[in-house]
Each structure stands twice: as C-alpha cells, then as structure tokens.
Length: 222
Image (tube, rainbow, N blue to C red; front, side, top):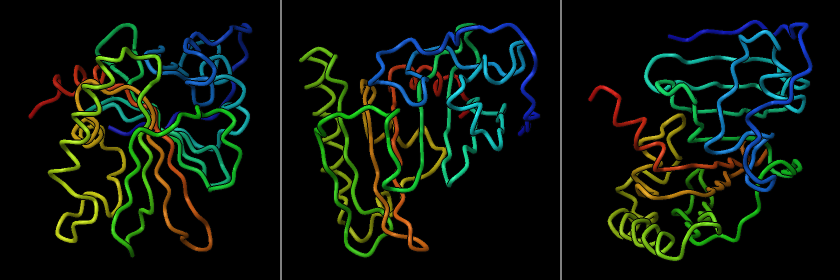
C-alpha cells in the first residue's frame, strides 16, 4: 500500500533527531545505516523526524508499507531520497539509503570513500560508471570476503556483456539486486553515474548494509 503523508510541520517540542547515529562522513542528510528510521507521524512533526536539512526542502513524501517498508522523499531540484528499513523491528534500523541528484550538486551530506571496484558498462547504455567502496571501518577479513563476493558476481555477469541487461541501468527500488551484486556481508557505498539525459547528468549515491538487508528480505514472501 502506498500512503502519501501530509507535508505539514506540526507544532511540537524541539527534539534532536535520534537517527543521526553514525559518523558524519557515513550519513546522507543526517540519516545513517543502522540508525532508527524516522516516524513523521509522531508529535514532533517532519522536522523532528527527518531533521531540518530534509524538512526544509521536502516537496513530497510517500510511505510504501507493503513489501519492504520505505520512504520516497522528493527534495526538489531533481533530488530523490529513498529510506529503507526493517519495519518488523521496534528499532526500525535503516539498511539502505539511496540519493539521486543532478551531477555537480554539492554532495556535502554524502560520504567520500575510495572505490574498491569501478564498473564500466558497455558503451551506449545509460549507466556510465559504478564505483563500489567498502566501509573502511570493517575488519580486514570481512573486507576480503566482500571483495571475493563482488569479484565472483562480476565474473559471472560481465558488465560489458551485451546479452546481460543487469548493467544497462540499475533496477530502482530493488534491494534484492543490491544484495545479489554486493554479497551478503557488504557494508559501504555505491555511486552510479548516468549519461546525460535532457542535458543533465544524474548521480545516484547509495549506502547499503547487506547483513541488515538479508534479514529483512528473508522475511518477505517468496
């Protein structure tokens, strides 16, 4: 079920958002992996739930309740933010943040990692490049496991294979595809750069926690 929430900032107590739990360089607009997903239906209203950076620019908000719960936020200026979380847990932990915006816009609220993998699909497809960066805070053993998982997937599905459409354009709103590509132990960032459309080049920045995602997706009907 899709539910559009009214964009009314309710008058309430000035409460510091409880979702900005990760380091500042591992957040998108103050939201972090593993942090508690906001609840805009609370008495504090949108600003208390999402923080001023989102509330001030918010032009539309959709809450998808069926399947894997998530918010789709229209922040204006061709910016869209997806917030995916475990709705079955009382802690509502976020496992995927997905920000799409025009290239050149300041990504001050997104992390900057050195990529561990750089994928270049075949020429002529909308998707120009994908950079995958593993969270540098993870242990060496876990990083190596993640690298092996991604390398195995890319060997089985070469990005330049004209018969394989996976890398023509990453499926939107599809956490299962991210889990398939990145492996069950991934935590980190993925940046996708798309070729110019209508004179604009689009960039998608994602933070993804595969271990949290695996638990959520395992609860879904097959």
